[in-house]
Image 1: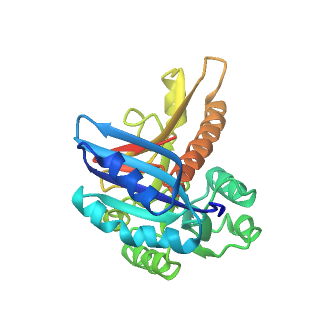
Image 2 (image 1 turned 120 degrees about the vertical axis):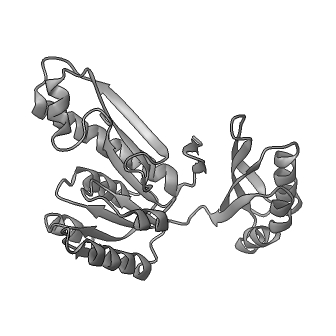
Length: 286
């Protein structure tokens, strides 16, 4: 018997109706593909159906053939779909400013093999992270920005995204607001992280603002970037309790821990193709 070793991941969304799972599983069975795991969700609010299927094929050719032959099935259900090899590690461009805790977490997980991505470059408006990035043998680009140079800086950023064929952009505490046009060009492939106090504590020193108000919960949110600042579809969140014994600096430290963990989990879910957009929300399969 031929070993089923060549894995692929099928993701799809379409209007919900009877027969979708049957059509997908039947299609794969007819081509000798074995379903390793499958998850699906029908949203009663949007009327959309979402599915992620991890399957294996006897050889690479059969997996590629399945991808080519699936279009008629997709057309019959008006699917938005894609099939990729499960070994694919998306080319990822990371952006950072001076705070490097999220960048360090991403690079650490990449280095130990637990985050299946390929970092192609790190871009920063400061030089602080140069040595850290060089230690991973990843190209570093310093793109300083000011109000007068923002348009040129974003043009240079877009050129680098194209030159590196980046499939994903991660804002790992990149403390600059992207223009509406750039957000639209990166729709569905740019992830940001921020503290969870919004909209209550905007602007500088949010943890110090939270401390002054005696908050009892702090947390972080990772989401896709949209022109609506910090309001894109949420991928991952987490919180931790705090109390009166912690000063503002302690809140900052705990906040950094949550931010780096939440961003890493969000990026992992994205690169493993577990996140599907559902309007202003997301479906995140386990």
